[in-house]
Image (cartoon, rainbow, N blue to C red; front, side, top):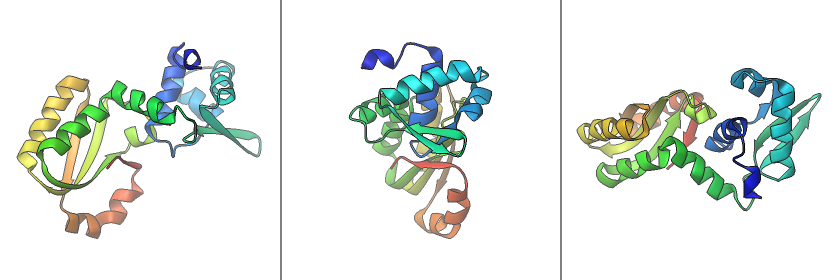
Length: 174
C-alpha cells in the first residue's frame, strides 16, 4: 500500500497540497493549472490515490473534488510525513518549548491552503517572549530552508481581531 504513495513528483505535490490542510478540497482542473500538468496525467494520480483510500472523492455536478481521507488508518502517518517534509513539526516544537504561555498556533495563507511557496505565515496567540520568537523563527528558517513570517498577539487582541484572522486561510495546529 505505501509503495503507491511516493512514486512520482506529482504524487508528492498532491500529498503536500491535500495533507497539509485536510479541510482543502480541490478539483482536477484547478490542480492541473496549479501544478502545470495536463489534466489526464493528474487524473491518473488522483484516481490511484482515491482507489487506495488515501483521498476522498466527491462528485459535484460534472466536477470531482478531492481531499485527504482523514478516516484512513495511515492518515496520521502521512500527515506527519508531509509536515516533516516542510519542517512545520520542527518549527512548532521549537516555538512551544521556550516561548511562554502559548494558547494557539495557526499556519496562515498559502501553507494553510497546502501551497509550498517558501513562505510560512505563523500566528502565535498567547503571552510569549517576542524576542525569543524572532530568534526561533530565524533558526527555523535556516533549518527548513523557508522564510518564516511570525505574528504574535495576546489572547485579548486575538479575541478582538478573531474575525480578521480567521477570514484568512488558516490551519490551527495547536
